[in-house]
Length: 186
Image 1 (cartoon, rainbow, N blue to C red):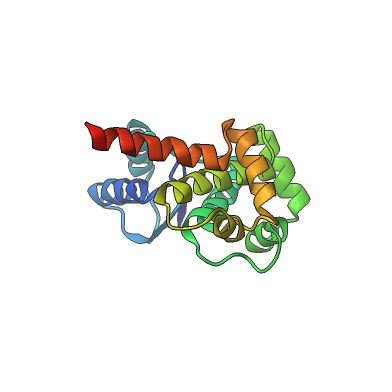
Image 2 (cartoon, rainbow, N blue to C red):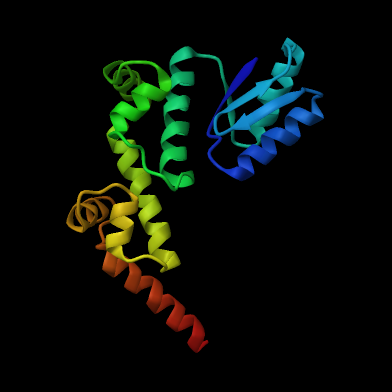
């Protein structure tokens, strides 16, 4: 049996969910971002208790098919951008469609209906978050970051970065360097 959990986007969330499932005596087969596979059936009483505990932790157990599909899309995008070092061999829309077994048009319509934004907007937001993270680590050049995040050019990344954050990547990096410098002076 699979359970779908909204807002489960980090390793910390996975650990929290695992602990709550174990506390309820639910046998876990696997835990991934947004989805948990359990052995056997889960009683209504266990589901109610799990729903309550997840809500207390800022997560939500999903029942609705469209919400479940949106969570699958979001988990796939998060995995693709934040947790995978290899870029898909095809474009994002083909990759998502292939992985989930639905036409991209259908997935896009459901996602927009539920989230109020397009899949592409969601991807861009997460790519920019990843770019910010990589800029803060200061291990890669902007060219390397653009390549890693599958941008056609540094200019394209810079334009999207500024559109989302209001800052250029180089200014964002300077702010970080100035903060570090100020902290060293203290």
